[in-house]
Length: 393
Image (cartoon, rainbow, N blue to C red; front, side, top):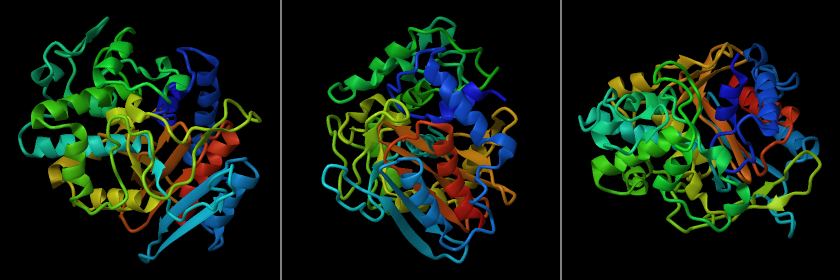
C-alpha cells in the first residue's frame, strides 16, 4: 500500500501543515493512513453495523471526551429518508458557547469535487475534452523540471495521475492569517519541485492539479471560478449555506463553531477560525454545512448535476494501493465495513476536518465535521468510523 499517496488524500487541502518532503509529519500521517485503511474496515469495534440507534451521538461524544477535539458535528440521512443533526463539545472555547446545530465549517478538499463537477459540465457542453492537453487551454503555463502541460491531460489533473508536485508542504501555516495567494503564486511554488512521475504512470494526491483545473475553468468560461461554482452547482441544487469565500474574506458566514489547531498531541489549542483560505483555492477554499454536503453528494450521485456519461467518467476510479479505495475524477469510493462502498471526498484545512459521503444506492448520506484536525491515529480512525457507523446501520 502506498501510504504516502493516501496521506496526501487524507490531509487534503491543509496548507502549511508543516510537512516538508520526507519530513516527520509525513511519517505520522502515513501511520494514520495505514491504520485507517487496515483491511478496508473504517469503523472501530464500537462502530459496527449492529450499533445502537444513538451510536453516532456516542461517537461524537467520544471524539470530544477521548480524542480531545473541541467540537464535533454530524448530519445523517438514513435509508428511510429521515435526517438528524448531531453535536458534541463546545463551539467556542473562550466563551463556552454551544455548538450550533448544522453549523458552517471550512470544508477543505470537498471543494475539489465542486471544481471537478464544473469541469465535467463543460466537458458535457463540448467546451473541454477530458483528453485535452493542459496547453490546449493554458499554453505555456505548466512548465518545470519534468513538467510540461503539453503532456498532461485534463483527466489526469482531476484524477491525480498527472505527476504534478504538490505545493502544500511549502506554504507555512503561520502565514495563512495574513497572506493572500493568487493561483499563479501557488503554481510558482509547486513548480520549484520536479515532477513526481511521468504523466499517467502513477497516482499521487496533489492540490496543484486542482489549481490548474480551476484556471482552465476560468479560461474557458471567462469568469472567476467562484462564480462558475455558484451558478452551476450551489444555486442549481439549492445549497443555502455553501459558498466560495471572496478574495480577502477570512471569516466564516453564519453560525459556526470556531476552529482550532494544535501542533501535536497534548499541545495547546490555538484559534485559527479566521484565516485566508486562498492557498487552497480550487483545491479547498469553500465553506458549507454537513447537511449541504449531504445534499450535494446525493444530488451528484443521482445525476442532478452531470449528464450520465460524465457521471460515469467521474465514478471510474484508479485504485489507491491495496486499500480497496479508489479515486475517480474528484470523487472517491471507500469500502464500508458492512459491504459495498460509499462515495464522497473529505477535506482538512486548519481548524476543521470533514469526512462523509453517500452510499452507492444514494439512500443514505452522512457528513461529520470536527473543529481540530486529529493529531493521532486513534482520532483519525474514530472520525472515519462514525461515517461507517451511520452508513451501515
